[in-house]
Amino acid sequence: MTATSIETARRDTTRRARSSQGLSKEAWGRIFVTPYVLIFLSLVVFPVGYAFWLARDPQLYVELAKDPVFLRTAINTLIFLLVAINVKMMVALFLSGFFTHKRWWVKVLAVLFVLPWAVPSIPTIISMRFMLNPEWGVINQLIFKLTTEDGPNWLNDPTLALSLSMVVHIWKSLPFWTLILLAGRLAIPLELYEAASVDGAGPWHRFRFITWPSMRTLYVTCTLLSMIFTVGDFNSVYLLTGGGPADLTHVLATLGIRYLRLDQVGLAMATIVVALPFVLPLVFFMMKRLSR
Amino acid sequence: MNTRKLLRNVSLESGLLLIGIPVFLWTMIPLYHMFLFAISPKDAAFSGQLWPTNPTLRNFEIVFQQKHHFLYNFWLQMWNSLWISSATAVITLMVASAAAFAISRLRMKGGRLVMNFALFTYFIPAAFLAVPMYKTMTIYRLQGSDLSLILAMVTIASPYAIWILRQASDKLPVELDEAALIDGASPFQLFRLVYIPLMVPSLIAVGTYALLLAWNEYLYAFLLLQSEKTLTLPVALGNFLSADDSPWELLMTAGFIYALPPAAIYYAFRRYMSSGLTAGAVKG
Image (tube, rainbow over all chains, first blue to last red; front, side, top):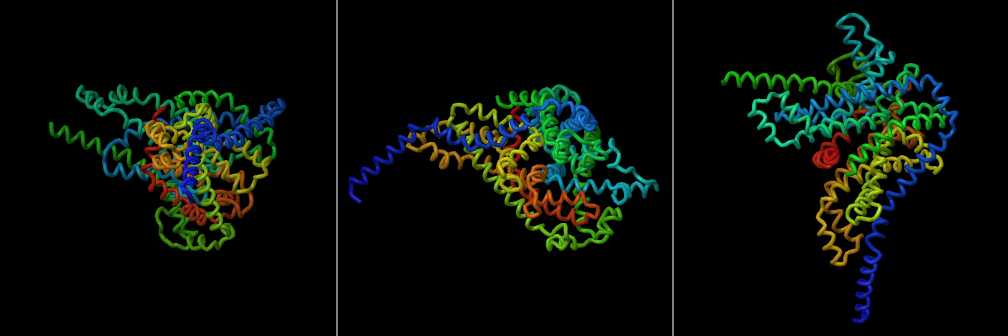
């Protein structure tokens, strides 16, 4: 290779570098963001648009309103959201305080406590389902040994079955929210508590005047976020009760799938469209909060 | 004074125990029950025993050797789960780190809009997107293939990944990019040689998140996969539930085995996870 060709080659690379910079930043930005935009367009925008198109027939909503399963589902979903979420978040808030205590065994417990969240739903729900088996499950066998009476047929009673789905939901997602709230608590400056202790404030006052004011925003954010996620909690209901007995324990997430399996795609989509007036305001509220 | 202090300490400790013991039982009972079934023969498991009266590894042997007609494809289904969750993690990492780089470092026009798209996707309940996704995959002729599940999982995992990565990358100093660009690096070199190495802790958190999400997924796998050979293990286990003669002790053994890797991965990467994942939520 001669000196001139090396010289040309070098000039070439600099020119290329400069031109790629000239073309650059904005264009490079577009190139880098393209894969995600493609995924968003083809697997979010298109499916959602298609869902609306399939659910365009007003007759579907008349049919939906006439279906007794749908009404029951709407009520179940509301109960699920109001009871399960609030109980879960209050317990999480309480336990996050418990986990701030520095003891070796509290640390060990914190490590174990996360397991329900880290492991897949299906094995543990299967385990709970068998515990509740009326004949062979360990719970009813214990009840029989202690009282010599038969225990209830847990999953055959709609009220019990729905309550137990809520228990499963809480068992599964309590660790996650406790960790989030714990992080929030640990961010509160310790001096505030020390000053309050000097002033003779008891635990309740410390919570009321220091912890709660600093955690309120986080707590409300978490509660709303958990509500949005829970409208979509398919596993806790489907794997435990399957929507039964007699389709009395469905929530919106499982009802859509039920219609799909019955080959009523229009109704499945309509179920989702009906829920949007309640879900979308929450979604936009959360987006405003989190995109700051 | 001293006795009062002692008394207060005793009541604090016993109060803590009074909370700790129920929390321990609540967390561990379903897991212990599963483990108990896994190491017990069928009749002992069904007798309502509280501890292993007759422990055995027989169930594990049957599962590992696929000696029950429910478990003929156990290893294949384990492999499917592994392949789908690894592919999801890798693709999510590539898509999300590129998008976060464009939004946060290149400050491209419209970056905010893309971020809002991602957040919007993150907040749509996953079960709501499931039915439309199912129909869409049929139109794309991907229905039933492993690719359909991988794409669906990437769609669900990447918004949160982009969000977390953007927050982490906003914290890197601007001077870094400027120095690299003045030295003649193209944005692509900047991405590969400067950005990615600096983002490793967040990338580990996000990769783990995507991996666990796909490994643990039930609903989408159940909708998008059909043939016995392409199923992931959770769907195969779910099919047990509808059968009357399900071998529950084997079901729980297989479930126990399936739960081990995510638990191990979680503990291995806990440091990255807790800092990366909670940082985002606390901000709100």
